[in-house]
Length: 334
Image 1: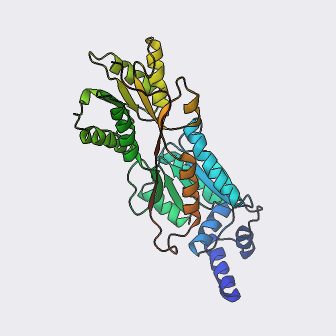
Image 2 (image 1 turned 120 degrees about the vertical axis):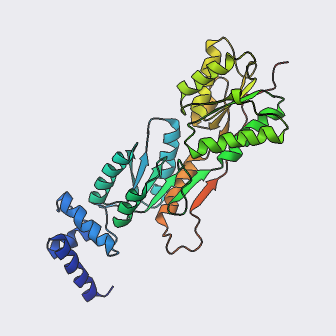
């Protein structure tokens, strides 16, 4: 942009914002001596005119929006984001976001201070939120989106269907025929895909799908324990179970212990995620490894690219899952 044209644009922005050209220049150059509300108004106008506005903090910032920071699953996502950000000298601000209202609160703060973009975990912004993001020129990449995102949002996930199939096939190859599954919430895309993979493995092996062996609950230890208790109380209990995630699998192991039972002799157990503590369980947990840190790092690098100029960049990337066999699975007791 030519110097005179740039000056003219800044004058127009100052007039629209009702401030001096000096105030606009301060925001453009990352100065902090502008009131937060005024800064947000100026920053929004600058971005609408194609300017890159530095954060109020004076350095590159990316936001990680996540429902819960207090779990090994979340820690892996945070680790992957921070490692990728450190490579390019960018800082990460983590914020808990459970609802559209909390998302709107974050967006107001981020617009005021500036951000290079957001990584959003398990929350898919709606039309109004996307419009506000576009107006503020804040790029976004979704990680493990709760529903299929379509072309409007770039996203990173994992091969959930293949993971569910691989876990179930492993148990079939060990000789199990009554294999249960504890799925996650039915509204989640990942939950449905893992359950579909389970069904596909049973059908490919010529085994019927027993609906009484299909349970759903929260991705939590308590959910896994409760559903495992019901499965173990069946007249013909399963000999193996595929849990929706590692937390549920730990709950299954607890339910076994409460009954004086043990994996894999009484019940083989497979988890999903391979969080670091999976290898610490007793017995060590067989699980489907979901590359959580790599998913976050991939999303960060997608965020830094410009989808308008990078030809052929995919809108959704799926990273491969792998089965990690440990001591919690074995042949059924004869």
